[in-house]
Amino acid sequence: MFLAEQGIPSLPLLGLVWAGGALASGGANAVNHFLDRDIDRDMRRTAGRPVAGLRVAPRYALAFGVALNVAAFVLLATLVNLLAAGLTLCATLLYVFIYTLWLKRTTPNNIVIGGAAGAIPPMVGWAAVTGGLDLPAVYLFAIVFFWTPPHFWALSLLIQTDYERAGVPMLPVVSSRRQTTLHIFLYSIALMGLTLMFGLLPQVGLIYVAAAAALGAPFVWLAWRLWRRDDRGRAKATYLYSLAYLALLFVAVMVDSVVGIA
Image (cartoon, rainbow, N blue to C red; front, side, top):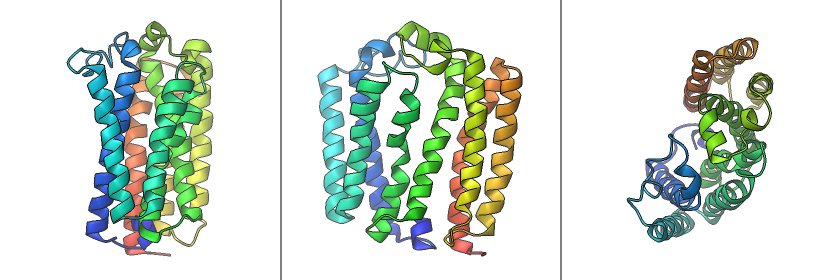
C-alpha cells in the first residue's frame, strides 16, 4: 500500500485492509485446522491446536472459518473495492483447496506451488490503493513466492520427524536433507536476484536497493553455509533469519516509498 501510494496511504483504508486481511487469514487458518486435524495430532508442533487438541468441535471450526471469510469479502468489497476482495478470497481458496486439500499431502512441491496463496496479500494492498494491478505488485508477489520455499524447507529440516510421522511429503522426507539444503541455497540466490531486479523499477529507489543487497547477502551466506554442512543450529539460523528478512525487506519498501530517494 505504501508502494502504490508512493507515501503514507490513507489510515482508514489501511485499517480496512488490515481488518479484511485479519478476517480472511484467520478464517483460512480455521478451515485448515478443520481439514488437517488428523495430521495435526501426529505433529508436536501442531498437536496443541484447538481442533486437534479437542477443545473446539470440527464443525464449529469450519463454520467459524467460513464466516470469517464471508465477513472479509463483504467488508473489502463494500468499503475498499471488488478487486481487493476478490484477490483476498482467491488467496483463501488457493490455500484451502489447492494447498491444504491437494498439494500438501501428495507432492514435495506442495510449498512451491502452494506458496502462491501467501504471496497474494501484497497484491491486495496494491489493488486497495489503485483499484488495479501493475508490475510492482507482481514483483512483490514474486518475492514472497520465491521466499516461501527456502523459508519452509529450513523449517522442515528442524521438524522432519514430525512430517514423517504425519506422512506429509516435505522435501527432506521424500528426497534427502542434502537435496533440501541445495534447493534452499539455489532459491536464496534466485530470491536475491529477483529483489535486486525489482530495484530497476521507477517506483523504488536507493534505500530499497541498498536494503535488498544488505539483507539478501546474509540470506545467501546462511543458505550456503547450511548446504556445506547441515546441522540443526544452521537450519534454525536460516529459518529465523528468513522471518526477519521478509519483514525488514518490506519495511525497506515502505521507508523508500515515503522518503523517495531515486
